[in-house]
Image (cartoon, rainbow, N blue to C red; front, side):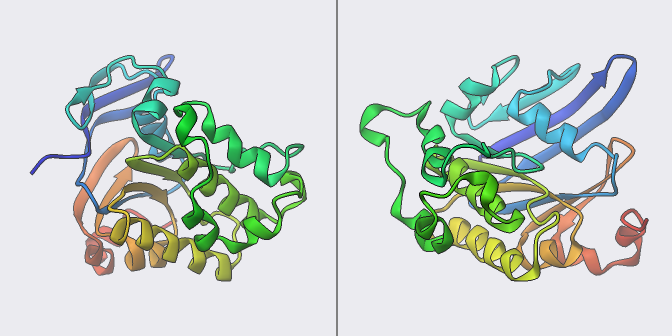
Amino acid sequence: MSLALSVKTVDLHYGAAQALKGISIDCAPGRITAVLGRNGVGKSSTLRAITGINHVSSGTIAFGEDTLKRTPPYKRARMGIGYVPQGREIFPLLTVRENLETGYAGLARNERNIPAYIFELFPVLKSMLGRRGGDLSGGQQQQLAIGRALVTRPKVLVLDEPTEGIQPSIIKDIGRALQFLRDEKGMTILLVEQFLDFCREVADDIYVMDRGEIMHTGPASDLDRADVRKHLMV
């Protein structure tokens, strides 16, 4: 089976400090893959390597048939990797509409529109198009960040801790949105998370990290196993 995204034996360093140690992750098309682990184990570094924000020291990252090597982040976005960063990073002084329209940058002129399904997934965005991003609640800003990534027409959607600091009702909305994108749009999704119940509910496959290494790979049902959960306990 071909893979939408494949990370093979990747090392990543910050100066002399090694953040990732030979990690390998395979994301199959049309599935949700979750990477879990405690704080500081290298989850966000993995996503920064995939999106090109940080260069890997060794190993390979393949997107479909393309090996990314030192492909810059903007080219990876144009190829179809959509990124929702930790902390959302919306533009607080721009309106909701303007934030969504920043996703136009890598699109052809005839594609520069906001897909209607984004407002079906997150109706609050349509009702707040004229509001400044900084005036939205944390959960609304997270929906805006996901919507902005979807405007880019991604083939693979990469999310860094989408439930962090979000109220339970919006977490459910985000979970339903990710399942819709997988089931109805055939989108491949890779997310970094610490919320086990969320991953158990939405993910198909899991990778558990500890100290920059992959400690376990398997189906999401493995989160019920004691030998897996021990790597997630604080």
